[in-house]
Amino acid sequence: MNEYDSELVAGILENQNYIRTDAADEAELILLNTCSVREHAEEKVHARLSNLKFLKKKNPKVIIGVLGCMAQNLKEDLLRTKPYVDVILGPDSYRRLPELLSQRNESNDNYIDTKLSRMEVYDDLFPARREGINAWISIMRGCNKFCSFCIVPFTRGRERSRPIESIIDEIKQVRDAGFIEVTLLGQNVNSFHHEGRRFHELLLEVAKIDGIERIRYTSPHPQDFDDDLLRVHTENAKVCNHIHFPLQAGSDRVLKNMNRTYTKQHFLALAQKMREQIPGLALSTDMIVGFPGETEADFQETLDVMKQVKFDTAFTFKYSSRPGTKAAEFTDTVAEEAKQDRLQRMIVLQKEHTLERNRLHIGEVLEVLVEKDSKKSEKQHQGRTRSNKIVIFDKVGEKPGDLVNVKIIDAQGITLFGQIID
Ligand code: SF4
Image (cartoon, rainbow, N blue to C red; front, side, top):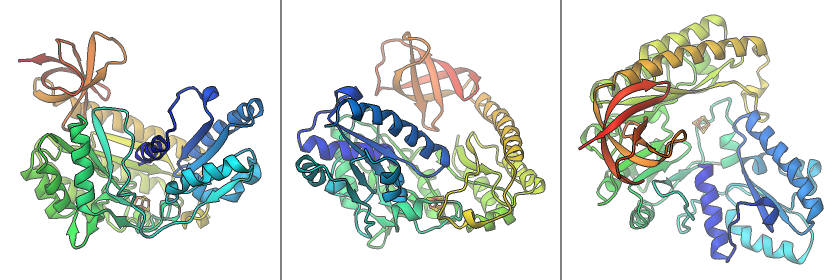
């Protein structure tokens, strides 16, 4: 979502005749689009801002802005510790950027706008996209779920969905610009609803667009994953056979304290149904270890769920307290050592599952969308299967954006290796 928002802001600025540079010391304006979801993400921004302080000393005219969730979360506190920051804008205030920049050019005041909106979906603004393979498309913003560990409902406000027509218009535009894959984005993407039409209906509309070959979405919430959505996956080949399905924890006690609103059994039953009904499905997930009150027995239950589902990949994190959330008030915190130990054990287990799942593809021929040169050799390309697996293969004349058939000959870690066949 932040990548999309950065493209959106770039689009607003390009409309004002700003020109992009990748060199910070050439820039007259530097904006950091920030994330508050974990402490580590905020620490990175603080470190980056400290570096920019030196740049500002050298060139006092450079305007430094902080955008996004951290701006929303910290507001004036950010100015108190970093007075050289000129502009602070929350996720619903990007439209005001040109106006604030012109005011900033006239006076040296700092500007803060962190008003959250119940309406803003930026549906008439088109992002300036750079990458030419996958286009991110925001379809809804905000979240009403209030998981107890999560700051997002406070930084991005209440859920609101974009009109289907404007989403379709944007996708036709990116199709005309050469993109053949789109990823529909929302904090809670499958609770999309607009004027009585729901998420699976939107997917069906997107699938009708000629030239769009692959449709992805992230992130769905298990509570809102219904049979209609499952049917769209089974009946429409354009909707990719990869589902990011965040479990977070496998113990009902922890899930309840997290306010995740589903049980282990509900999650397991859904995952099984998905695996049975969607051919070649890859399931990825998000996991948190060391949530307050999590015992070793709870953690073992989580590992047990992972063993049953065998996720293809997992994003695993140690719990970090976010001030302002419900969980930040919980006092039964887990010691850092125990968190680290559990995280390591979880990573080891997931690596086994990833390799096991990937080795199942050896010998298969998979359709791969060519993305770019592989990191290791310019004689090889890197692409992605419909199930979102990375494949490396020797070049034989194809180019980024092409769909090719690749026979898988090996699997190592998260990567498949293969060769193009006719
Ligand atoms: S569903 Fe939960 S974790 Fe996801 S954005 Fe909403 S509150 Fe945060």
